[in-house]
Image 1 (cartoon, helix red, strand yellow):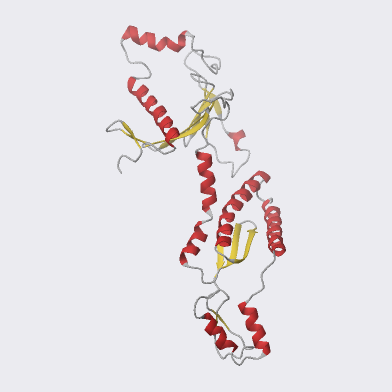
Image 2 (image 1 turned 120 degrees about the vertical axis):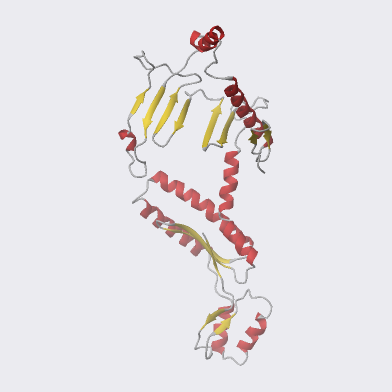
Amino acid sequence: MGIANDERDTPRRSSMLGLEAMTAVPSADSSEGSEEIWAALRSGASAETLAVLDELKHPPRHSWVSQLGVLGISLVLFVSLGLLQWSVAEIAVLLAVLLVHETGHYLTMLAFGYRDIRMFFIPLFGAAVSGSGANAPGYQRTLVALAGPVPGILLGLVLAFGCGVFAWPDGRENADTFHALLEYPKGFLVSYATSFGNDSPSFTRYMGKQATLVNIGGEGSPRYQVIEEKGTHESNPDIDRQRQAKYLLLPGETETPPMGIDDSSPEHMADWFDCLRSRQAPHCTVEEGFAHSVACMMVTQSYWSGRRVYWDPASEAILDHHPTA
């Protein structure tokens, strides 16, 4: 949140100036015509009045020490009161987000010559930046207002496109670590991440409104677990202890399935051989295999081009724009 104090032609009442009614007092940053106003106000004024006018025209600037003091005191209050309802980790995240956001406002005000710029925290609410920018053009005020989200957006772009060679910098061209997002028109999002520099057990989660189906293990793992939805961590930090979870077993199975099946095992190719004998369609049809390949090609093309890509089902083509555009 950025706060710009507009001092332009601020009506002020002052008996010391001998003014009978409300007088428009221009600021030091006023545009053309303000010097004539100051000259008219100073004409015939007493020494005391001249001192007041000089103070109005050239208000004292706050030192860096006072600005840092305001920031420090407000930060202590923000953390102290925040600990009453948030954890240390949550406060750390809030502080990072607020600092990134408010830094955008602060730097933009600084670039446009705003005076008395201050950043401060508001306990249990957020943070803000205030500054005096009298007669600032409209486009500057707009940029000041919009500058808050910009650092976060730029940081988000860096994180979103953080695919590349991180584990094996041996001259390879293809990424060894990446994260892909695939949005489907039926209304669900697939998030896929992989790293060839780490062999931690893989997992797949199908997250629904009433339960989550978790596939535990690597490619082809037959171990599935169903976990029910039961409230949120925001309302109850110990909600995971109340969730019912059970492993899925096929008819006749009595033990928990393994976390993976070796490619050389008969089960890996059993469905294929059965279909050759029965002339029936396999569990994964050719259309499903085609869709799987298209998703892989779209992710690869998006990685190499650095752009979002789209699938046109009518022409069966990968496009760099939405099919309806």
